[in-house]
Image (cartoon, rainbow, N blue to C red; front, top):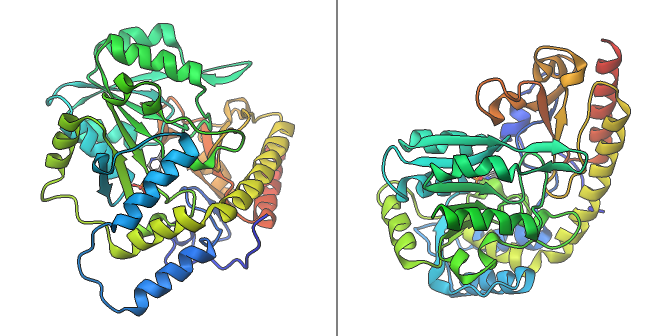
Length: 377
Ligand SMILES: Cc1ncc(COP(=O)(O)O)c(C=O)c1O
């Protein structure tokens, strides 16, 4: 378990939203755990030099990322496949803008992290969605229905592992998606920001299925979620295909800034020295996930599936019989992400997403408040 003293940062977006109110903020996806000591030390050293001009990734950082991909996912990445980015959301937008033409279809499965829905539209593309299905084995794909939607698309935005349903897609599921991408000749942009947060078992990048699949895939990764350094803005795309990579790079010109030097320093330290910390983080998250599953499972109006990855729980509140659960829980002192933002129309208004990347006492208090709120109905 991670040992730490908890004091929220004064400028935290998540905590500021409810400043001065008795609402526990479990909405936006960053955690309450301080970054690994090695990351803090690397930042302190970088700052001590006093020079903060434009930066670029050092060869040692590129080497670190390549070693990480080789060790963690058995993926042999070439240095020139890497494109550095200040965040993954810009990467989603760049994928939309650099593949196909205005008016082309972009496919994604819902519920999903909201920028998957807005990036296509803001890039003058047509958003094509398909709901994930939930059965006795949990959340999964409706492969039969996917044909008709994917056929009309040029780009597929895949979330792997999936925010918000917490699935780490299995190899057989990835293969079925890959077969569809090949059949309908889609480029796949695989957002793998949560890939180092699989709670049980290893992560398989979509691009590692085969060289042919790698050639149609833009993979987006970052140390930001795993090591709780999202505010430092450092991410990267891995794009093996030269043409896809050149188009992606040219969409960046003039609008995507250099990655800041502190982000680069933190990224190298995190991947190079952060693994012991990450393992202990995963212990804490497994404990928190089990607690959330257990407590939510006891409440008649709420339900959820086992969490395989991420520090996010997707909670189905339909049986509560209230119009807008996020607003209801906020009034009861728990600030959750509103399901309404995760799909088209009102498809997920009756769902909420809970961020359990926090200290156990705060999580327990939030769960107690949820229990009391449900009992009051
Ligand atoms: C799936 C997914 N992609 C991207 C992001 C955000 O990435 P960034 O902060 O690097 O833009 C998040 C944040 O929660 C996420 O869950």
